[in-house]
Image 1 (cartoon, rainbow, N blue to C red):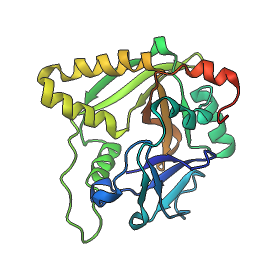
Image 2 (cartoon, rainbow, N blue to C red):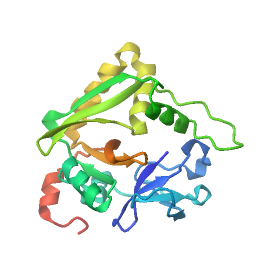
Image 3 (cartoon, helix red, strand yellow):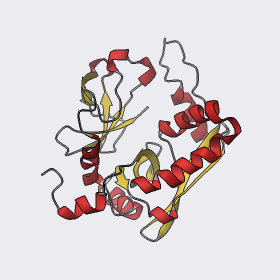
Length: 237
């Protein structure tokens, strides 16, 4: 899997891969907003400027969620673009392949369709879910019954983007265990209604095979007043 990370000084948004999370030692497994130390190098086959390869054995957990909850949004706010259109312009002109956008809250719709392995993209996703390498025992595939989407507007244009964040699949798995046939309606309520009220922001990234197309690779939210803080002008003051 790939992970989006921010350097400790807050200056760069990076794409870190491969991180085969289920193969990491328990002491290496990190959560969102943990501080980790790791060795990286530039890949030769991936020209996206934010992409770095990770030496998995070097991953060290430095500290766990040391940022207070109300401060966490400050580390990703500098990477918020005005719209997907602004990201696409940066992508064409400078190769930018990672960014964050805030969809127009009233436009957000959460939908899904049955997942199949019939397309090349789905087959590739299923292959990566096994997180296997040569001479290693193949892991059981992660459950994927549905593919999930957000439809929304930015810059007065509507977009429908697939959600590739592992969190949405994990949510479905846990909801299906807990709520049975009510899992999908309850997910829609959470992801479409509750999240929007929590300043929903979307981490957008391109795939190596589709370097001009942005998909949703992460979902961010906060109960803090993001607009009021941004209007103050100082992000790290």
